[in-house]
Image (tube, rainbow, N blue to C red; front, top):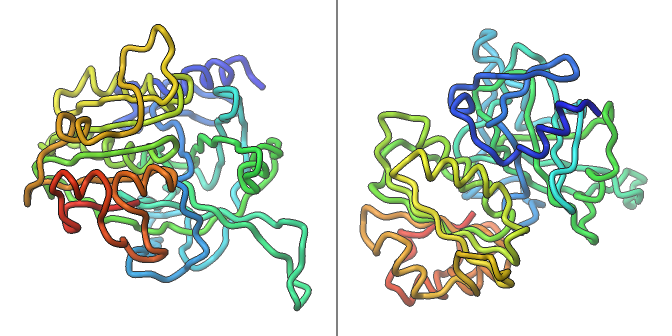
Length: 327
């Protein structure tokens, strides 16, 4: 692994202004790497075994000319080669996958990709069985020739363990994109977000889309919950974005604060929501993404393919189902 890539892994959460324009300031292993186009983590705790749903809209692939060529195919599994990888934290790794350098990945806001890997078993017909998981890319949608995943490896996570075993040159099968929510600039005056752990990735995808568009005046408020300060993914990047964009406000809370911690402590509370998010309104939309326990506490879990009934803290504060979207 190159020294430059090691430095990149340490700096992975940091945002640079070039990230919003798809510019690159460095290269390694023969290809270009825009620092801000950093990563993707599993988009919440949901597992995608569903391939048609009112909440999952397959996007059309456009291949009419080079400027619009896309690497993804919503109807076919495509292999992407791992170019390089590096550790970012004790259980999180940065992966870069490459494809045709003249093509874009083909991702809209807010959408995800689906990955699959064989699990070493066969079905009744003798065909291999696969584990399938979604990941939310947060690299610049305009970047060509590559996409980046920041993956947290769980001891019992079949897919994350598969990623952990990959070496440069290995390939991963990907299908997509799957659109979760069609974001439109200024669709709401104020967007509130509640994220837990790796649920930050669909939030960051929307945040960067808003902040890089000078015509989008949307206000953003994010409540981000984690187990400990060391578990906060992309914190340096988020801090830079908040410091350089007055329309982005972030509040962190952790279950196990250190003595030096200056943020909130404990689960997302009614008081945090009232103070940190926009009040219930027709011009307000609240996004929620995180592990099942957090979802149940904050908004109620999704009902498989549907949004499910709104409950928890958000309902107590006065939000209605049309004001909340669960990733």
